[in-house]
Image (cartoon, rainbow, N blue to C red; front, side, top):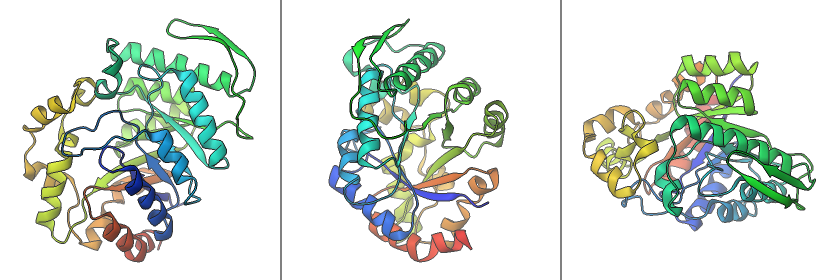
Length: 318
């Protein structure tokens, strides 16, 4: 069975109006699903945006009929899980059930803004597990009282609920997070076609679904695409846990100086070569993900979405 193909909306890079336009154009092009990121800060100053994701989802619900998944929301530090439960429930109602809450353990970049300490990964995963428990209880429509290790909920009830609770998917970029996702989530999210982690999730979860996303840089030439990708997204080339622990766009800009434009060019499909754009999906499709999402870096999203609608998606489905 071939995967479904979706478009990844980057809130770090685009204004609310541009994100809504992309959602509408993605549906017109034949994409079947939307991912949308949830940030307080962009990764660097050049990206330059970070609208409130829940407002954007509400607007998207009025212009297209595609399902929407957050990729990903962190319901642990910056935003209490009770608030995320209400926001997600409202989004599911506005999207008439076509909503998946994607969650993760977050990055200091977004979560430190209220002055809370940034916990270790083990503690963040424990917080996330408790947060998911709180969210699921609130989605029952009952009054909830919760006194946990990390969260308190006092006599709270969510009144606006969809007919069925949304699925909860969880991101996992290492073995520990992947194991937690297999245990507590309805599905898995990642940005790598790593067959070992995907297989680990499949085995531990009993075969639950998995999503993956990646980025391309459409432009009139490969050189222009590489320049755009490196200027806007050099941070994607940072290794290890840096993306989880650096606290501000300035720190990401400093660290990204270690990533060369050639490294970016080698890791991203840049330019208008349609065959290369089709081939970029190969490792994700061969790995066996149920859904593969693609995002365009830079300003040429209209051209990219038109080309994908006319050429790339039909080629992938044939």
